[in-house]
Image (cartoon, rainbow, N blue to C red; front, side, top):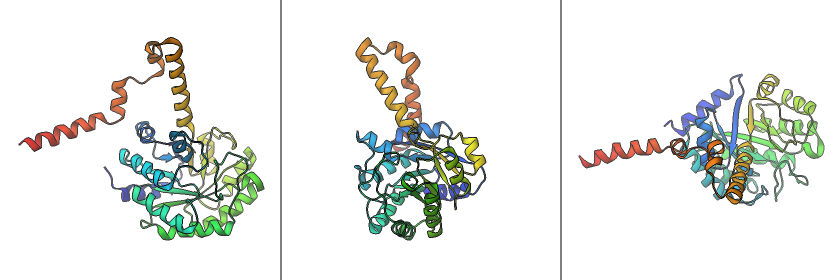
Length: 295
């Protein structure tokens, strides 16, 4: 198992390379395991997906403590970088500093802070209120000051495009980058033309959200790479697919009273699931250290 420090160092170096990094999102450790098993280079802990796992909408009801605990659970089961959604930093600059410390201790490689005012909403929802550029710049500087490992990456996100357009988003991203943000991102809504202008004129490495809310155009990864985006995050894909699959399974139980046929085409066999969740490694550890303890 590589150290957290080496994972962060490797990811910072990987970010400097030309090829785009594709990052699926999840709200739990099971999704993170599946992401790593599928061969992806990193996983995104989506606030939307975490709140969904609590049975809540993405309106900031899950606390920093709960998010840090979930981040630690995810970090514990994968060897790839974990990028964490840290919402607004959960308050003012002092809250942001605590947020950075908690998530750094949890082992994340990067964390994202947005410029919404409290109470926050999902970036695709209407009616968001924003803090000033100056206040958000202060949060970014506080985040940078709070981190211990310089390879912990800080992502500055703006939601201003929804109310003031792409040019206003680029102005904020420039301020975030100047303040020291390692990566920048901007939610929509905006058009394909707006997305291209945003990516091509980004003041720093840009994270682009390919979200099934479709408030921003979903751009295929090869095109995002050609435009110059550094990361393509699919933040909702797994949680929406999981909810769809669970609802179908429940309907099958309700209508057919059996999942025998459904299992053949819509479920992972239990031995395969056990393997994906790391049973083989657990059995290896028990065998190795159990035998060692008996000698």
